[in-house]
Length: 273
Image 1 (tube, rainbow, N blue to C red):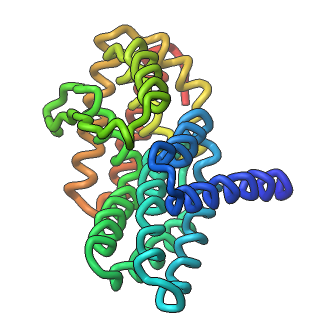
Image 2: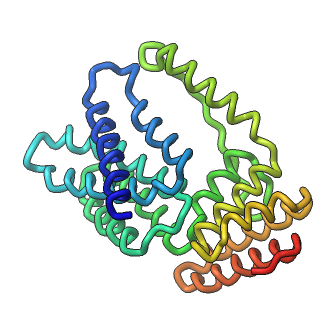
Image 3: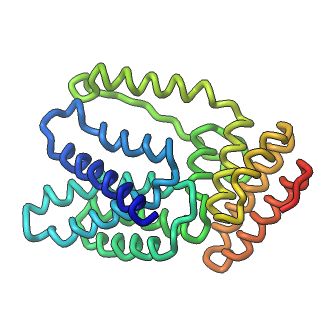
């Protein structure tokens, strides 16, 4: 098991180094591809997210040590894609992130607040998001998916729209074709009940960890009708938003609410927890 984890982290480390090399590359049409590749890898296998977070934090710590010894502008620029990727991976993680890893992330990001603008602003934004995720696991995923997929709920009504105004010299034809194909495939799966099931599953996974019993929960969610799925989706949104409102003091209450939702789903489909 240790060797397997080490192999995964070694492979991910090579990908991260390729991402950093890409930042310094002269070919603008290829920039962003390694970050895209890493994000798709996490999306396909959320279980690798903890290993990737560990690799990203180590690289950020290295960058902090090097700043001041070499050209500062180059060092600062390299920090941005690492922060953006870290933020995405924390959102997309399909399992509980160990408290010790959260602590390492927090310490590293706190040190980065000493960087000049706009780098410190990106670090601060990432820090605040990760602090919220620490208190309420699954909150970042819930808010992002609800906004992106226009999932209506009474607690968080924001919607996201993305417009791309791209210079052909930067956004090349092959890259455009890749993005278009990805969005077209994604759109075919974008029905509301499916997205609501995905959101309920992910929040319960992140909030309850192994107690979630993921395989049984997946089966139970498939058994439910659309109205029941909508009901549990709204219950999860309410639990997340109330926990964010309560702050650090509401952690145990949040987990109790998620546990209650899990038991209710299992009971609804004739299973116990």
